Length: 372
Length: 150
Image (tube, rainbow over all chains, first blue to last red; front, side):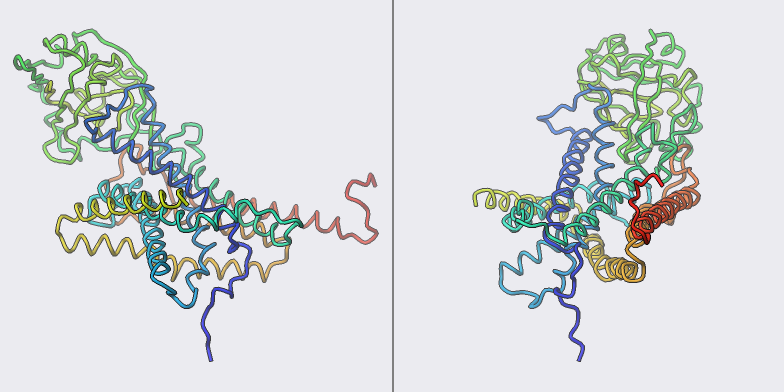
């Protein structure tokens, strides 16, 4: 008679509690880093009243979001190794011993479901590939809380086991220890391969090595484009000679032509553009300081500015430039990029470029600025 | 004990907040709830029923068919291959993707995957050959130490 697979059938070193605990520790670090940087990105895009996202250091968002994506990628091999390490637990019989045992098993199902959901949807999002209909940012954010909650609960339940597994030192060398180390070493190697294969999206040194990076670092004027003028439906309007920048202040409305904008004092800054999808690149921008522009129309820098694009639809057609950023002398209404007039796909006639801001808020093809 | 209670309370609070956010996201749409639950449950099912048995079986086969010299590098190579292939899925299977933009998703990803796998298996071959040579030297009749000048 067939007796089916049992937990005791799995005898490999990978399934030892010392391996599970060590992998859990590293996975906890990766997920923790991913969760915190994810919340920071959420705060940068939807600033809550009590927090103002800083404009310095200029690479802050580039670093936090780069870390978010890299730690998420590193979590993939760690998660798979961890799941394999505890795989025999799936065959524990009886399936449920008591109510606490049932709740614990349910929380582990939530943990593995939420963790796999986060890494899978994140990976598809960086590829801008959406085999689902729900709104990715909201789902990724909601399920992150489920994952973190389930992890905390899991650690609370398993803490004695984890402590024992991480601290126990036998008086004699355990003959199975080299095999456990070998499994862990293979896991670190897989983490290294995953990170090196993708990190070039944000790390210039790895650009040519990272064959699976979703950004090639090229593009018009040496910078990748996330949304073309064609896709945004602004090709004709952006090149219309009748284009005027409308600046709305509490005192009135000013309309400036491209020539009038170009006649204002010019500033040149080196600033990175860092996308929420983890790719980033540095560039040299020329344009008018937002602070100077606000003063020129009689408004005070340091007030938030609502920026609207020529684009009529789309989730990211407008953005709020926080007061911290409008006061920062590095925040420009950019007219040029890397020594040339702004390419149409980079936001001609003008775009926002601000230090330490998510790429989706660096609004292109600006039509209207409203001082709030 | 206090640490465990604190962790459990924080965990339950985060779970409750997450569940609230999921419900808010669904906004009363049954089809969205079904889709979200399918994605949440689909991961563990796909992993436990397909991915883990296949990977585990392959690992077992490698360990039992290959000698101790080749098993370790081949297993490492197979693991790296699996990870690279998984990471490449959203880049290669682009049925639901947006347009390719200048500088984004415009790499030759099939070529990239092929190159990465070629490098991985070249390293496996090198590691296996080095280990074979070491193994032979250690087990040579006469028992000369590898550091012997002759």
